[in-house]
Amino acid sequence: TEEVSGNVQPVEKCFLDYASFGYDRNGTFSGLPNPPYLPPGYFEYLTPAQFDPPLFEITHPLFEITHGPIFAIIFGDDHYNYTDAVAFAQAADDTRAVINYMHSWPVPADFATKIPCDEGESTLTQFSLSLEVPSSIESGATGN
Image (cartoon, rainbow, N blue to C red; front, side, top):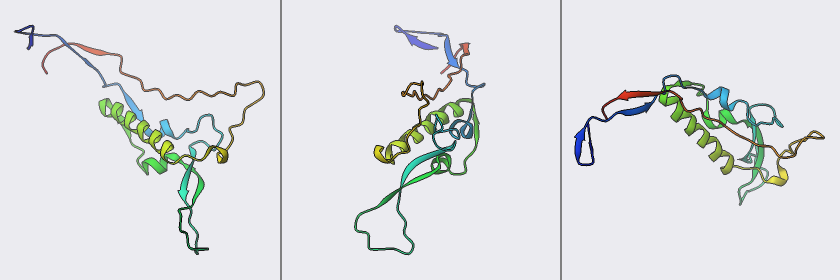
């Protein structure tokens, strides 16, 4: 029951059914970048430069361009698959983490690997990641 216009009465509520939703973290992010101008699953990012033994005293941080699997950088060894509402929430959070990392450690444009374009193809590339919202809704449910 719920108060509606000053009256307490039964109210029909609808809920999204996440029971059939699944999310495979490895399957989603191991294919980046797309188009694959680097090996699949690899990404370019900046890392602090390491010199062993040190060549000179470094007074300002130096960075180098690293090519490596983005999955391991962001998620470590967590290859879990998720289901239900947890899967939907985790997919959104993982997407946020990847975008945040790409924007926090970008390679300067003049030094990034050039994306090859085949003759006759458009030089514009559209990137997208789709999260599917469960389509079935439980109807007739009552309560909070």
